Length: 466
Picture: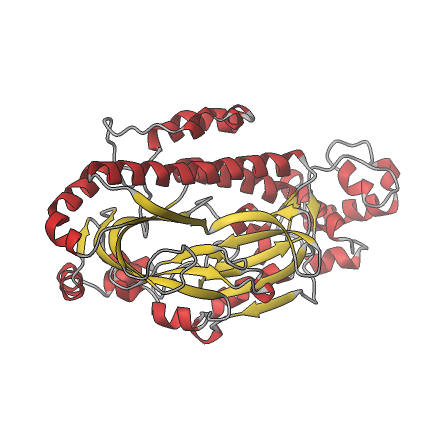
């Protein structure tokens, strides 16, 4: 039997989305050897006399949609809205159409309250990277992303640029010895942190299973655009830290929750997609109701992954600074793949998802990196309600990794690094500076979202070699 079409179901009285979804799924699975005419006749019979089929283990759920009798159903079907919530786009001329269309789809979810698209946005899975989405009492695992709690962390050290000249070799050795990237195995690499003693690891079967792997990966960094680098920081007058306006040595890192976050994301995305049925173009935006057990489990797991990501950065910074005999004057950090319970400008309680977006409430500090040779920015938020108190999380990709690989040679990358005075340990042409948007243009597109407190210039960069 070939697949029955929706218009055929409409002709025989199947106008309810749930009834149509059940009809397609059940007949496709249990009646695939019947003719189309036989299946359509069966569906007509169920519609006309649902009481004859209500107790059937296969057709009972279809029959229930035509009766007042309630039968347990493991999923619910939703349609997209024609009129969507308020969406604000920043730097729209530099954002690809596919990312805008993804955001428009997210805005049509029946749970959506408000959305924003940051100037570094590009196409992602479900929600575009750079997308911010406020929802009503629901969390979308794929709107948080696979790398839950991916974040920036900055340690500021009271040393001048002369420190690089006199200690550059030791800094490179420290990065090689005390950082660990990607999936490469290193049995001697082991970190300790109190997060591993959290009782939350005992809360679900999934977390219990993941605790051992998380312990092994603690203090390591992911692949792709994740990095640990020493850089020069120029702080401006009147900076929010209250530090003198001058140049400092800084340690900057970018990474997330490793395998812990990825497994949590995959597990709860499957549950969401199994229980929340959406049209094909929106399937990856399936959500978990916060009043359900799965919603509460995901929320607990997401927050644990966020604390774990923070712990990874803390152990990296502690090991590097100690090895060089340095002490941090100040630490700045922020998540950019996460969901928060927040109160919107109109007083509405919402779940705000930031997938590749920096929280930017008024006075809130954050770091927005460029690429391996261009500047990163230390900022504070302005508290702009149209952006849902958010800003860009970086320059944003301008090329896919494959295109970047095809358009840059190893020798070309080395020449760019040399010209910028940057030393790279590891790294790959897939992350070359041309693969990213112009960070200056991104910053210019969000002057109403953040205030720049200082500028960071990369000096010695450590990345995964792919």
